[in-house]
Image 1: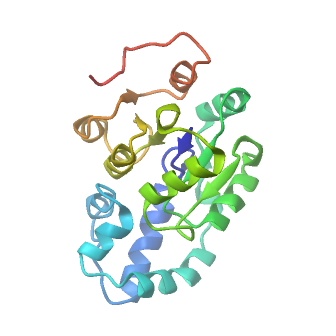
Image 2: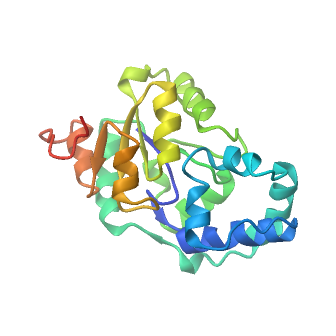
Image 3: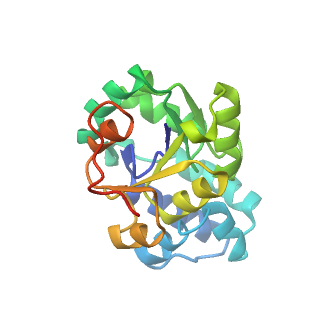
Length: 213
């Protein structure tokens, strides 16, 4: 089970909207004026979206280092209803994070919220900008066939990249993109509650009530 991080495990929208906005302003490319501007960057791969808008990714990443160092992690929170689900899933599944955020930042936040034990590995932006490549790396590392894997995300970009790799997609509605936008990306499953992951993982009786056909 491959998890996106921000918007799926951690509620960090306000924090990262602010950091991306400041990073772009710092390099003289103030592309974000509204929340809609920010969320539009995640309709495809985040870094590809920036590059398509003319952003120098190396300059942006360099500018973001100091900004990220000043992040107030008190403004973030773990999704409370997900935590008991995460406690059950590793019994029969390998859980890995595949995210656009930096791996060490993710590990720091996992430690802060006592979530480290649930995840076997983290593949962040330092590994590769493309989630497609990171998904393939994770599958190869753990010897998992595509047919046995799923990606859990909260943006249309997540769904597009996972589908391109050939793994099943689970879109969750408690994150950044709206239910309607996620539905339009045609995930294999569209769920509203974390406990639905248990059924989809084989932990409980499978329900098709939210399956997108």
